Length: 79
Image (tube, rainbow, N blue to C red; front, side, top):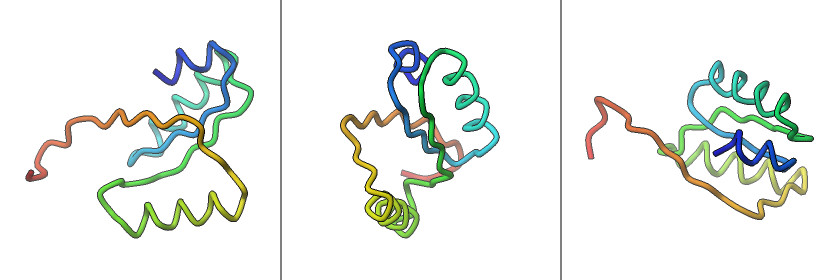
């Protein structure tokens, strides 16, 4: 999904638990044409991390126009 949006020259904000994977996708998105790709390490199951990121967006006046939740299967975590 991120690569497809990058090809359409969209600015992106990517979040995830694994910074190494975020950096790899960021690099690919920039190569595919996205003018800006911000990455944030975030575990969406931790309310404190979500709140902190929300506060950072407000502070930096970052607005989100479209949110795509593409969460993967987290093995070993209960329901």
